Amino acid sequence: MRNLKTLHISDIMADVLRSKAILVGSPTLNNGIFPPVGAFLTYLKGLRPKNRIGFAFGSYGWGGQAVKEMETIMNDLGWDMPVEGVKIQYIPDEEELDKVKEAGKKLGEVIKKE
Ligand SMILES: Cc1cc2nc3c(=O)[nH]c(=O)nc-3n(C[C@H](O)[C@H](O)[C@H](O)COP(=O)(O)O)c2cc1C
Image (tube, rainbow, N blue to C red):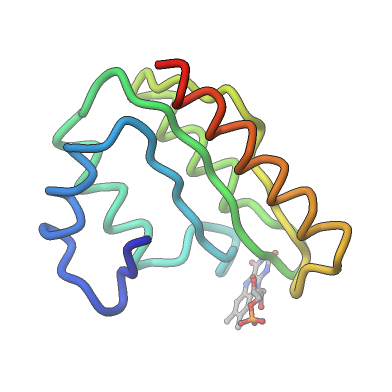
């Protein structure tokens, strides 16, 4: 797990370039992606890493556009997105946490097969 608040974007990018699957999380802020995550994805778009598995997840309050926007970027990069993104309103309950775990398991299975 890499935290955009505590790590420099280029350090995270070095790990991204070594990774098969990239899971990106962002809350929705002002109808879009949280700015530090947006900056990360802008940087990533410039590098255009190919042949990756992508997954987007995030919390939201009302509209929840961030997950869709992150998926659009991953799609533009030509990434495979075998598991549908997960967006959760405010704080996840037990059922939603199970949904997130399930998504993680499915992704793990896909990655193992690669
Ligand atoms: C300044 C601000 C703007 C927000 N804008 C949106 C928004 O446009 N759409 C939306 O669905 N949620 C919006 N939210 C709600 C956040 O997505 C939500 O608070 C967050 O996902 C949950 O994390 P928290 O518990 O730390 O607040 C906004 C929240 C803040 C504080």
